[in-house]
Image (cartoon, rainbow, N blue to C red; front, side, top):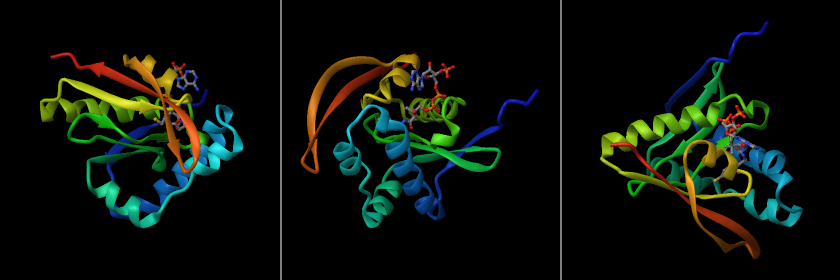
Amino acid sequence: MPGLPLIEVRPYRAKDLDGVIDLFQRAVRETASADYNEAQIEAWAQADRDEWELARVSRPTWVGLVDGELAGFADLAKNGLIDMMFVDPQHQRKSVATSLLARIEAEAEELGLTTLHTYSSVTGRPFFEYCGFTMLLARAVIVREQRFVQFVMEKVLES
Ligand SMILES: CC(C)(COP(=O)(O)OP(=O)(O)OC[C@H]1O[C@@H](n2cnc3c(N)ncnc32)[C@H](O)[C@@H]1OP(=O)(O)O)[C@@H](O)C(=O)NCCC(=O)NCCS
């Protein structure tokens, strides 16, 4: 019987940049494409390398590794917003996102945050609900001329 995968979570490093962009684009094109049409997926999957480089160092970001291989990443803004939560299509449903969220929650506690929030995709919603987030509202946003429904979700952290 195969053993459980070893998931390690560590801080993002500058040399992870191309790997996380590639992972993001594959997560959108291969996983999220179950819930969005082709035009939405192409609009969502655009990534400007320079903007990403700045964004990743502007806030704490963590990568998840499965057996040493990049398998996911997530971030946390000072106000408790999780903007990024993406897992490699090859590593779905192995608790990579759950492990990343546990790291985020530990950081949130250190920062004295009482709530976390996210603007979830349709694809991400069951994961965030599983982790104790509740939906506050659904709203429409326009990204590169495509309309997306976003779920504003919140988790109150135990004190
Ligand atoms: C959402 C996402 C980050 C989840 O990553 P993951 O590592 O597969 O999630 P986990 O394995 O930690 O899932 C934990 C639990 O969440 C729930 N869950 C996760 N994905 C789910 C899905 N597609 N459908 C239903 N429930 C799901 C399950 O209860 C799961 O537990 P189980 O596998 O024992 O049933 C990943 O699917 C992804 O990258 N999606 C595409 C990008 C995206 O939409 N990201 C969110 C942007 S806000």
